Amino acid sequence: MKISKEDFEEMKAKYDNEVKKGKPGKGKNGKDKDNQTGWIFFDRATLENLLAKSDNDPSVGGIQFYFTQYTEETAAKAYPNEAAAYTGQMTLVMRAANLKDNKFVKIELGGEDEYQNNGVQCPYHCEPEPTDT
Image 1 (tube, rainbow, N blue to C red):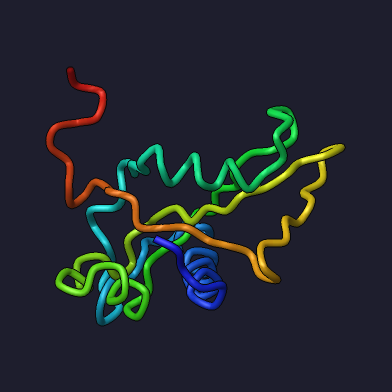
Image 2: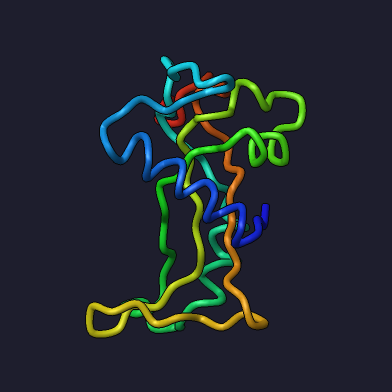
C-alpha cells in the first residue's frame, strides 16, 4: 500500500523518538507496547514493483527499508478496524533506491518518492510462523 511522504515522516519521527532511543514504543494513550513486531511479510508483487523502479544493475538498484512505527493516524489509515492495536507498533516502510559509490541516488517518480507499507506482521498475524513448512 502506497503511503504519503507526510505519513512516512510522521511514522519515522515516532520511531526515532521512541524505539531508536531504546525506549518502548508507545501505543494508544501513551501506554507502553509490550508485544512488539517480530516479523513483517511483503508480497512479491510489492517488492518487484519497487525493484522495477530502481536501476536494472543488480549491484546498484534495490530497496531501501526504514524502521518506523505506526502513529494513531497512520494506524487508522492502514488498519481502520484495529488502529488501537497497531498504534506504536514497529513496521517497515520501503522505497525504490539506487546506491552508487556508497551514496544513495534519488529516484524521481513523478516528482515525489513512493513509499510502501502495510505488510502482514506478527503480531497480530503470527500463525503459522513463515519458516514452518
